[in-house]
Length: 178
Image 1: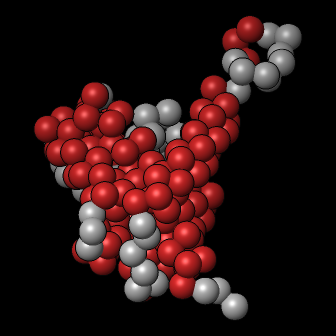
Image 2: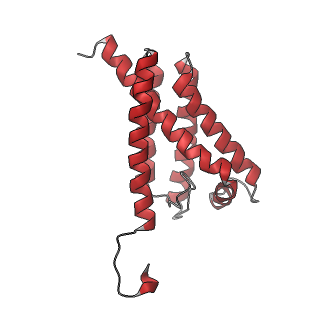
Image 3: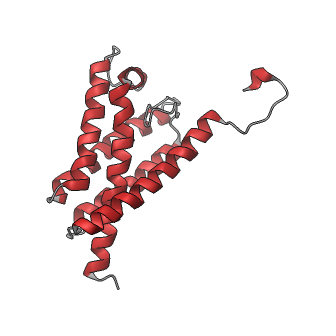
């Protein structure tokens, strides 16, 4: 049985994971908004490349990440995270169903959308939903530990994601295969 203390620990980890992922996703969009602006055109969200929109979305993601990490009222912050993730996932599913394979600019790594992207977002939607409905507010210590765990998980994911895109260990006899 999960006690109240253990539930708050899990909520702290959920907050930390969401915070780390949203900040890690938002910062590249703020620094290089053009990639997301192109992705928004490819996804059919807008008709013209609008870097200011890419930057704005990055700012929103960072703000949601900070809110999930620090806000004393977790419900609004976790619902904001949930809505963003649901919207992103809906756009990706629509694109994949249409046969598109778009560079999503999710973390600035050149990652192309796939059903694995949908699965990842599904897990994150579950985390955001858990944080929203758990009814527990983690203590400051639980949030700090959650942020540390979330940061480690996020760094691990980003490392694997980047390696999948860059493929530094692929070997080929022809230099043009890379």
